[in-house]
Length: 124
Image (cartoon, rainbow, N blue to C red; front, side):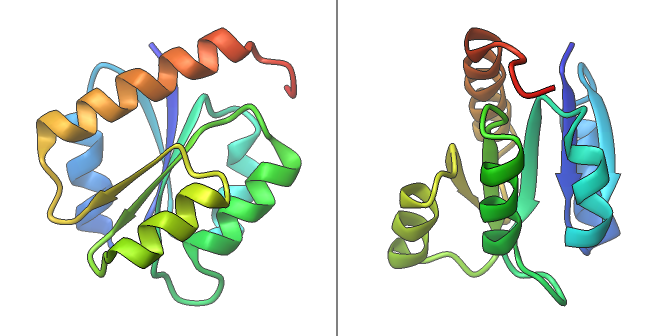
């Protein structure tokens, strides 16, 4: 079981992801500031791209600096190819579009958790 930090300003999305990822320990945060102190213990972060205040790209950059071995999956309702490519170039593990496909989320999470396991917990 992995610890997955879900960062989204919409409680319904956090709830839905918690249900989809019920085989893992899911920790929730409603934005950038709430996520940072929780990220240290996470094996994976799933973050929304568009949030009030600092967005998912800023969180991705900060997590990359602080916890480089923790994979980050970007999730957005406003996806386009340019944004996806930018997120992946800046270090996102994967990029998923809302409304998300349950099987796609589970598969991406499984791959990311395995990547984290192989990298080890070097920055904890």
